[in-house]
Image (cartoon, rainbow, N blue to C red):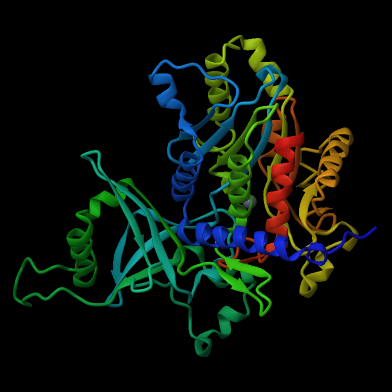
Length: 465
Ligand SMILES: [Zn+2]
């Protein structure tokens, strides 16, 4: 049983829709390289579609009813969009979930130093990265610096056409005989992933006893002070992410793919948010959940394991007058979810790592993983066959191209998602998403047909599940 390539069925009008969706997605991907920016833009998209901040509703003492649309943000890094349906909430919700944190390098708290007449910023990697990917490539600095006076300074340098960029140097091939004989995991020590940010000293008098000991670093700090009004000490309370510089772009002469940073998992988050705001009146309340910290185990106040989701559901149920603890438990248990994350696209160069009957092929549509995990499905949410049947039926009824897949060959490796966390409530959850090549590399590849089918599949799920 082989699933068809989605491209074959498209009408000219569908191709037009696909291109419009992917144009918006490329822009989203290019302009939102941190979880904070994704949430900020998500809020903007929601407000433009008539969603109201839940905090405002609570502050004004208003009730909620069917047809109302609200959003809730959590520490600026999670976002929940809710479109209230006509059915009682205790009958459960149709939920889309995806994460917006991506693998990257974070600046350390005390990052600045000078060496070899150059200024550097030291980093600590976030999520699963191959260190050797990060050298000799243009990089941008994106994030926030929070000052003691309560103000926050936004930093975003390296993406605009006339911005300077940054880089991490690599050892020249001529001196690499020892390095090239090491296993790939040891070829570039993660501790030397230091970003070069300057190469020019401040001017000073050699005889001046107060002359700066690190004049190149001083120049960097002086410019920072002048342009952003921040001191070196302000890095103590900053979250600056080192990310690949440059926009997402069409890939292939046929422009069938998109090369971009952070497809994992914005390629699921963006179509989910778009499906949510484009679905108008629903019977079962629809929710789209955008979360942080998936790449480091979904922990912390902004990870899926925090109570943000449950607390927000409790607030909403109170505002619609279904405020008993039992109604909340019932609502959670009766919910249905597509937990979306990227799948491993079949890569012919590494065919031996896949089992082709159960691999995700680029361009064959939305992926469903009944289970994930490793070493015998360990750590996986294994969706019920009954639920898989329901999801299959919804996709077929809506004419959505989908494929079922596993991450790779049995025992080749493995991975986890946020599915098992939501499954704790007893709700039906299945892993779904878009296949990518070069997952967790600086530039990942996704096929436009898969992004389009994901959007269509998410919309069908919210309307019909
Ligand atoms: Zn992911």
